Image 1 (cartoon, each protein chain N blue to C red):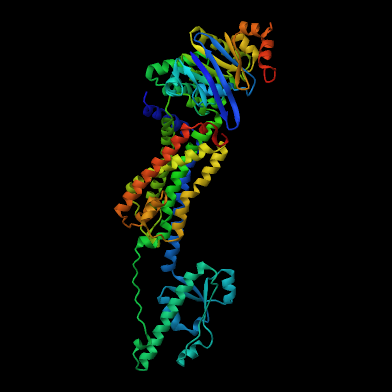
Image 2 (cartoon, rainbow over the protein chains, first blue to last red; image 1 turned 135 degrees about the horizontal axis):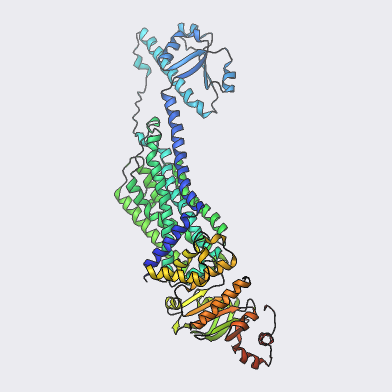
Amino acid sequence: MSGARQALVVFRKEAVDSLRDRRSVLTACFGPLFFVLSLGAVIAVVGRQAAELTRAPLSLPVVGMNRAPDLMTFLRENNVHPHEESVSPEELIRSGDAKVVLVVPEGYGAALRAGRAAPLQVVSDRSHTTAMASVGRLEMLLGQYSLRLGSLRMIARGVDAGIAQAVALERVDLSTPQSRSGALLNMVPLILVLSLFMGGMGVATDSTAGERERGSLEPLLINPVPRWAFVAGKLMATACFSGGAMLISLGGLALLPRVVSFTDFGGVFALPFGVTFVLLLPLMVTAGAMQMVVASFARSFKEAQTTLGLLNLVPALPGMFMVFLPVVPKAWMFVVPMLSEEVLISRLVRGESADPRHLALALAAGLGWAGLAVAATVRLYRSERVLFGAAG
Amino acid sequence: MIEVQDLHKSFGEVAALRGVSFTARDGEITGLLGPNGAGKTTTLRILTTVLSADRGRTLVDGVDASKDPLAVRVRLGALPHAHGLYPRLTAREHVRYFGELHGLRGEELRRRTGEMLEMLEMQEVADRRAEGFSQGQRLRVAIARALVHGPRNVVLDEPTAGLDVPGTRTMRRLIGRLKEEGRCVLFSSHVMQEVTALCDRVVVIARGTVVADGTLDELRQRTGRDDVEDAFVAAIGSGEGLQ
């Protein structure tokens, strides 16, 4: 009887056993689904906000509307709905009824006619970040209006309006729709890697620390099976659950663009599913082996669960950084497990092409790490320690 | 046949075995008797190749366990001290799993699995999951899976611990049957009545060494006591840890 066939026997038993374990199955299925749904919800909310900011009319309470009829016309032309408010501006802002209020003081008309700078007040609470978009939009429009009136005044005096403009600023925006949605799309590699870790957790714990705590490890080891075959079988089962969870994530992410609109927040979602899956294959094995080693060292099933929960934070770290900080890919990053996959996927999902050499490097390094992790697990299973855990 | 030669084993500072030697012959039941902590389980664990000895060796049908552990495991059927089950697998699936690991397949696997479950009177609950099993049922499953490959040598670590009266009777019948089939049976116990009722030979172990080895008659003669239990206590030096 070859070890490979025995490994398959172990694999089949662990797979059947784990599929009957509600907890393992639920974590593997609903963890990834929860992540994907959260991302979808965030994209939907952010997208709607972005759409509101640019397209939806801005409702603007104004004090002294009739003192500036021309300005009101200008604002209406620019998708702002000014309306007179009797309540004091402070009251409106504090109560949260308005994000920004425009006050036209009494002297506005007189100053304008006299050719002086006419006073206007923009009232807002700048500690409210949500208000800042509306404030910015209003201030930009007021600036445009001021520039227009100023130019008209200069022309009326026979002066070239361009003379007041010392610098001609032209904005060249190189951002693509994909890169504008960047920060949010950095969640995608994080979700995939976390799903992968969560998926295998249940099986890894149950087939190692669980096996020992139930007292079924010693009878199992007495069978004429080389230790590597036990490791291979258990690892295959763990990796299958990892892969399953990761595929659920990938599938959910594939459906995401049909459910929520990425164009609303100016983004395109361009995850190449085949490449992503292949890229993550070695990581399934590495993660499974890491989880098996960690769980085998734990004193009890409970301790193994807790430790593996903490282990999930390790792959989350590079992902978390990338959500908030832009990462410039460097060669060394592609040999670091988890970081390499996350950096590459975060590029791919934004529709940027990944350097094939980087892809190859990441795959080769991934396979190398997987090999090392498996070797470490087999080594542990060959020693007597596996029977006793940390206590032995 | 099982030969144990001069086993030494330490766990850190603690010397668990300090030279254990004995032989268990085919067609005989050999009892390994000793108080708790005497080294019975460690001896059996080295014999079943889950632990390795610091010194000395074990031979099963002439095969050296340290040289070819896989070949030894093929020749052994063992019920270790811890013999937990998988709560989500049925009794039949347990037996099948170990049968498959021993290379049994197809019709032979099905037949052997059925025979073992029948022999241990487990047919009625064969397809129930193990989570609801009683102590006795769990032990029967553990024995069925350990013997599914029909090993010539059977090692049982405290096989009647925690069993009720009918369970103990079934177990004794099984051990007797294994002997009739010409197998080598080695079992450990700290219960004297059990050893006297079943064994052809007794190996008494205390503080990591063998203090007496022989048939019950030889033991009585050597210690000069008529009562077997008195003989055991005399051999060990104290009755502490025995039942």
